[in-house]
Length: 113
Image (cartoon, rainbow, N blue to C red; front, side, top):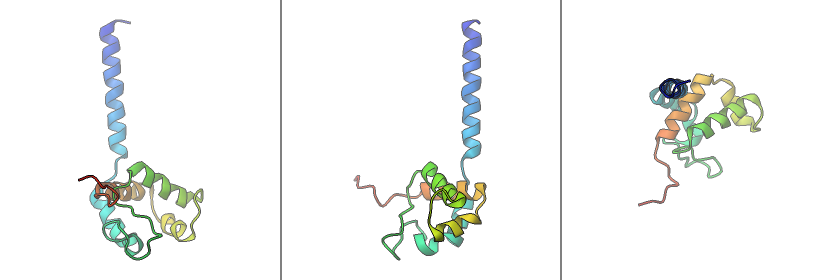
């Protein structure tokens, strides 16, 4: 295989990887709409709960962490009666969108100035 052909194949594989990861990214606007309707009551409108300090702050979390947590609540791999009920009604697309929305918000845990 020539160097030119290897370069083309590598570029195609890289481009395919980018298109797949882009397709898996959530829609922030749709996530905000869903989060406002479902999540904000406990986690706050901005993902920083003021109701109960034991509720996690979601703003600024990594989207893959949020996706995994919601998927695990939905499947039962992660146990919490309230979150299991909330996650049960979410589709994979809803989960990706909510994760994208909360990940897009500034984290209250960032102390950099």
